[in-house]
Structure formats: C-alpha cells, structure tokens
Length: 193
Image (tube, rainbow, N blue to C red; front, side, top):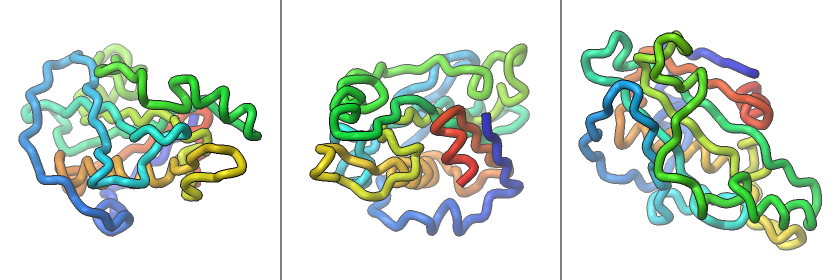
C-alpha cells in the first residue's frame, strides 16, 4: 500500500500536466451516500492516448461527495493493481482479462476501504472517491503507446493524466483542498513515482 497526500494540490500538476482537448463541463449527477461509483469513459476524441493493453479506451469510477458533506473539496484517488505481463505471450493472456481490457468492465464499482462511502470502513467516507483500474500492465507509468513486438499498448501514465484532466474539466478537481493518491501493487508503484 502506498499513499501520497498533497495539501493543497499544486494547480500546475492538475491543470497543466496534461495538455489535451478538454471535454465540456457537465452537471454532476446526484450521488447517494453509499451508492456505488459510476463508470466514466475517457472518450477517444478528448483523450486519444488513454488506452488499455488491448487498445480499448480506458475509464475510471467516481462517486462525488455530496455538497453538504464534511469534505466536498477533498479527493481520494486510488490506482488499481494487478495484471502484469513480461513478454508477448503473457501480454496476450492479460489482454483477455479485466487487467488488460476495459471491454467487460461493469458500469459501477462498489469500492474498497479507501474509496468506501461507509464511515465504519473509511475516514474518507465524505470525500470525492475515484478508482482507476489498472489495465495497461505498466504500473500506471507507460507512455510508449503501441509496441509492435508485443502487440500491446502501454499507456498507463496517459490514462492517469486523462483521469486528472477529466476530473478537472468535469468535476472541479483543480479546486481541491486535499488530494490523496493511494494504490496497491501496481498502483502503489505509480503513487511512489
């Protein structure tokens, strides 16, 4: 487990780290306490490099804090783990799973301790919650894109940058008072880099 807290988050890191076409802002959907996180697709037109190992377009899950919560401008972003590959054959196997493709991801995610809306499980229950699945087999750090020799896409860093950009454009991440990054396994490696 790795955790990094940024108080307050530097605006340059949130707003300027990834220059891309920004999607139009939209009204946040009302979220009920304890409701599962909703999937948010990273659309090709806005985030063309945010692709999973098999080339499918990545997504993330989010549950926004209620306006009257104790921490409406606090965020916890958890980077998922799992799904490592080390050669062409292993990458072909990972591409068939949740860890290499977004094709079969569900529309909702219930979360775990860090991104739980249950106050008994998480001291961050009133915060905005984001979960970024690991689908690039690159510890969320890859920027190589398509690698012909392995017939795979390594774009984990592009996915994280796109999530931050999308959250800023659509949900006001750039106005955060506190930003906590957490990660397990591959996500923990990314948090520490």
